Length: 96
Image (tube, rainbow, N blue to C red; front, side):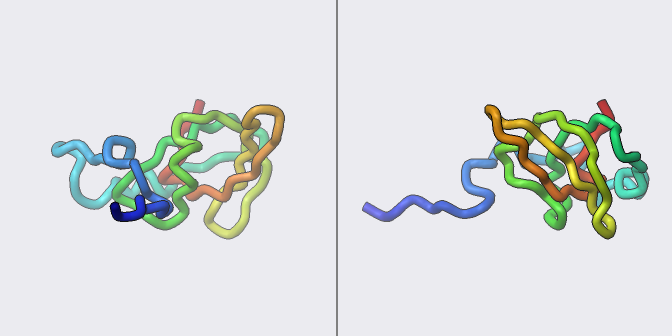
C-alpha cells in the first residue's frame, strides 16, 4: 500500500471547490473588505486564492478580529478550550 498524503490541503475536495458560475478571479471587493479590531468574522475559505488561507479545519469557524499584520488580519478562534490566533487575508473572511 502507498502511504496516504498528509499535505496542507488534503481531503478538501468539496471545501475548496469553486462553483462553475464563480470560476475565475475573485472580485476585487473581496480583498478590499475592511474589518476593525473587535469585529466578529467567519472563516470561509476561497479556493481561488491560495495566499493567506488558514488551515481547512477552521472553515466555518467564527472568531474575533484582534489585530492587523500587514494585509492579513489576526482572528482569535476558540477551539475546545484553547484560543487560537489565525492570520487570514480578507478574501477568506466574511462579516458575521
